[in-house]
Structure formats: C-alpha cells, structure tokens
Amino acid sequence: MQAMQQELETLRHAANTGAATAATVGAATSTIPATGAIPTSVPQTALPISGVSLVKWVGMKLDSFDGSGSPVEAADWLTYVEDKMDVFEVAYGDRVRYGTQLLTGEDQIWRGV
Image 1 (tube, rainbow, N blue to C red):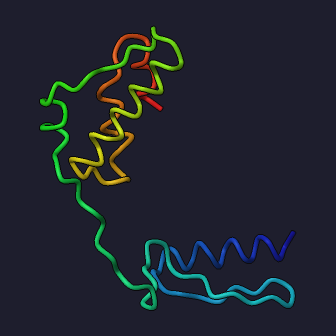
Image 2: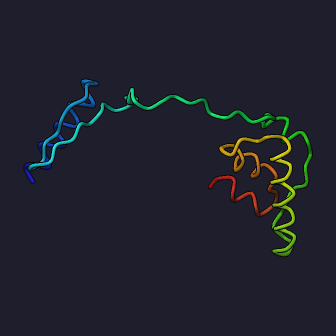
Image 3: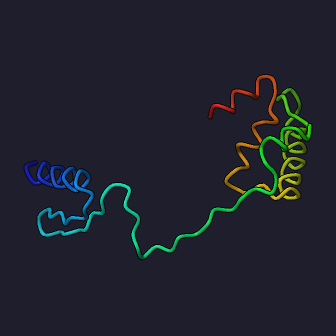
C-alpha cells in the first residue's frame, strides 16, 4: 500500500512540475511523461479534413431518417448516407457527427450519444 501511495505521489509531482520522472514499484521501473507531454519519437500527422463543411452538409437537404421504417429501409438509408459521405469526402472522424444531423423524430436521441 505504501509503495502505491509513493508512486501516486511521484506521478502527482511529475504532473505538477511538467517533467518526466521514473517511478519505481518493487523491481519494476517505468518512465512516465508529464501530463499533456507529446513524446518526441512519435511523428506528427495532420488529421484528414472533410471535403464539405457540416453547415454545407446540413444545407444539402439529404434524405433524413426517423426510425419508423423497417430494418430494410434503415439499411437502405444508411447505404445512401454512406455513399454521399464517400462522394463528398467526409472524413471518417466526422461521419458520426454528420450522419446524426440527418436523424429526425425519435432517432434524435442518438445525437447525444
């Protein structure tokens, strides 16, 4: 228990000072970077940008889905939306946010998820 408390104190100290520190628990030793620190060995890559903005996406008046149809209709709508996302080059990280804008009625509950 004391070893865990000591490691926790070491981690808090490292986070407060912004420096990397070594924490030792028993025989194991690990280097713990400061909170928010980016390792220098990891290459920085730019995130993909969607080919269309969310405002333009909503303004396109694409078919919406309200959840009242059959599972086949839901699958057809999803295929339709995925095709539009491919055509307009919506980045994979934005697809859920863009897709939920096309939900109406009771399906809007998914916007908060």
